[in-house]
Length: 181
Ligand code: SF4
Image (cartoon, rainbow, N blue to C red; front, side, top):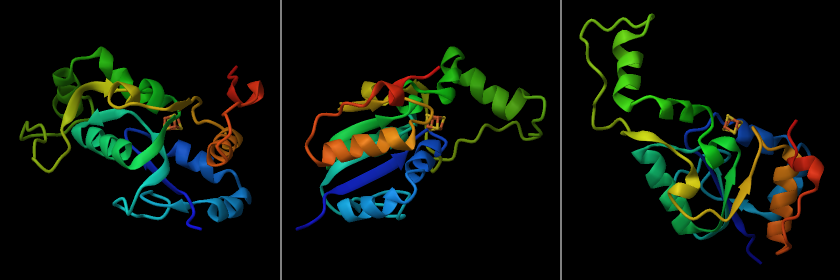
């Protein structure tokens, strides 16, 4: 029987949540028995090859490309999970939400203390993803089925959530895995 497919992506994230999934250590052998990875940085598959049971999203939406990728995940995945604070709340990238986008770009490319930009040009090549007015959490862009908090969520939390969903069981993580102090 074909194994269920899992896809993962990092939008405006740091890949720490992906690293946390790899922290399941030798359970990775069990995971590859249970699932087949589709579009994901883990296998470098760039485009979906079919319908996926689960999509894991790291990071929020900072650019039009992030929105496009997230919508593509929603289209191809039965269950979509926001993994980590950046996906759930925008995280560190969303700190720019307190400042107008124009000011952010001017500070980064024109006025910052370490900037050397004699041409005074803010990059605007059409091939560069367009920055959004602010960073959006994933659930403000598409329907998200589960939120897995943490920065990053622990390997055990990700593992237990995946195993529950793959076995059609309710996700009921113990308190120790979702408390942060
Ligand atoms: S939640 Fe934390 S670990 Fe995950 S992408 Fe954001 S900053 Fe990185």
